[in-house]
Image (cartoon, rainbow, N blue to C red; front, side, top):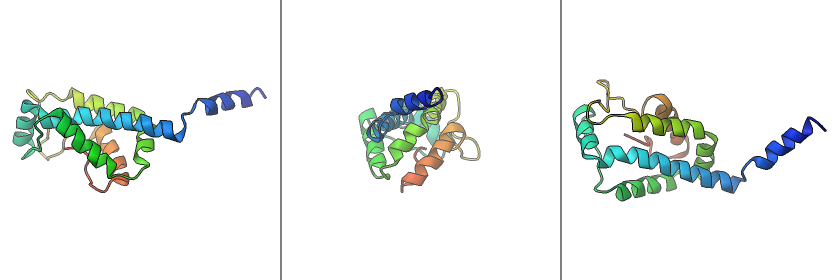
Length: 139
């Protein structure tokens, strides 16, 4: 019984599938808001144009986050549970995105790779591609 009790407590603390999906939606929103800085901030757009060979842009943050919401809506239902399961990876990706200096740093490397292609964001992109038909989730 002594060994069974911690397992029962752990199982009781795990969110339901619906709660996991809700938490995954929150993570998707956090990711989109971080990524949208690249597509709405003038310095980031200019940096992408110079270092990436072009830039997608939106007039407002709301326009950009709506675009990401639509993109996530096109993914398989399991994408939100997967994001919840990979919460640390999503948060690491958001931190990587937020760490990019659009004024003094290059968004894309000389080989064309960006923060979305490497590190935690690169790993997250591979996961998202497994659930979403549109390919790259970021820059």
